[in-house]
Structure formats: C-alpha cells, structure tokens
Image (cartoon, rainbow, N blue to C red; front, side, top):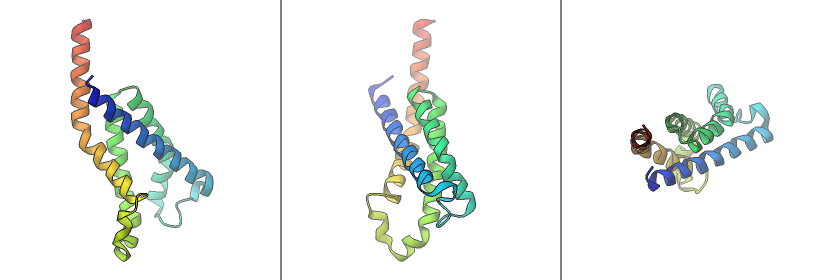
Length: 137
C-alpha cells in the first residue's frame, strides 16, 4: 500500500477517534437527551448513534478494510449535514461562527477530506490487495 494511503487512513483514525471521544463526552455530560436543546429528534438519535459508529469506523479503518472507508464517507456525509442543519439559524445570525476553529469548521473540513480522499484510497486498497493476491497466489 502506498505511504500516502497509510497517512490518509491515519488521519481518518485520528479524526474519528476525536469524534468518538467528543460524542461519548456529550453523552456522559448530557445523557441520552444531551442534544435535545438544539437538534430535532432524528438528529439527536443520529448524534447518539455516533458513539457506536465513530469507533466502528476507527476499527475498520485501522484494520484497512474498504468498508471502513465507505462507512467513514456515510458517517461524515450525515454528520456534516446534521451539523449544518443544527447550526443554520446561528450562522444566519452570525456567519463568522463558521470561522471558529471548533465546531462546524473542523467537522466540515474533515468531512470534505474524507469524502474527497475516499475514491483514491479505495483504489489504492483495491490495487494493493490485487498485488498481494498476485504475489501470494
């Protein structure tokens, strides 16, 4: 596997590990209704589910499974969308909120990174698996 692929996967692991910790802390602090003050019920359920989904991505990506990359894309597409929905009213009132180094900006940038890198990473994984099979087969 090319070294750039390992670096990208390492960034995935670090990003989803940080998300795992953040959502776990939210759950510890606020309980199952920790997101009730700013998110509609379907998004509250999703944010709570991230306590399981984020670590699952970490494990699958660390094991270099293509499904880990695919799950990372799905989770980030939903996470970025959910965060934009829950922050939209505040952004309308104060667009500079997007420029803060926490919250919506890093989630959005990480989501763009994951979605933008997924196809090349999946190609590299597929290619390295073919080479591995050819070398050992």
